[in-house]
Length: 113
Figure 1 (spheres, rainbow, N blue to C red):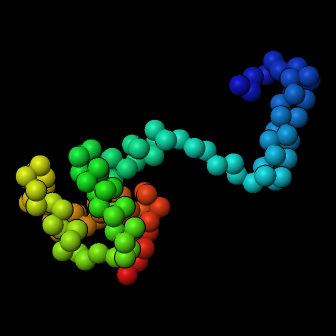
Figure 2: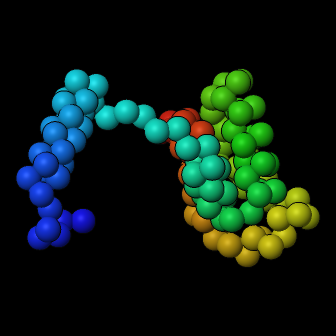
Figure 3: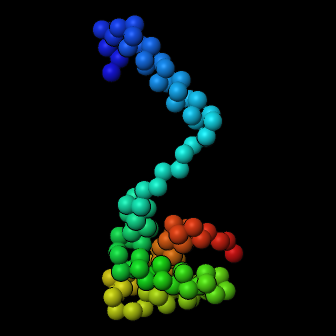
């Protein structure tokens, strides 16, 4: 990009572009970038790469949020007791609860307590 053969006009255009970008940043701050594909990939990753688990966690989290907004650790662990999640039965409790917390955070519901 920055080769020795840039003309004076090339450098002026480069500096003007930089100044324009800085001006927009100072005027508007960072502009939010909506990338649904990336968000979906991050949620699937948060669910251990399993789309069925992601859908189950999302449904449960939305129900909890719509009701009291609270659930017990045992309620979260009970989600993993169905046959389709047999693959993660031997995973540690911390892994299973962390999947729940990560998906909840990815959905914008990051509550502590």
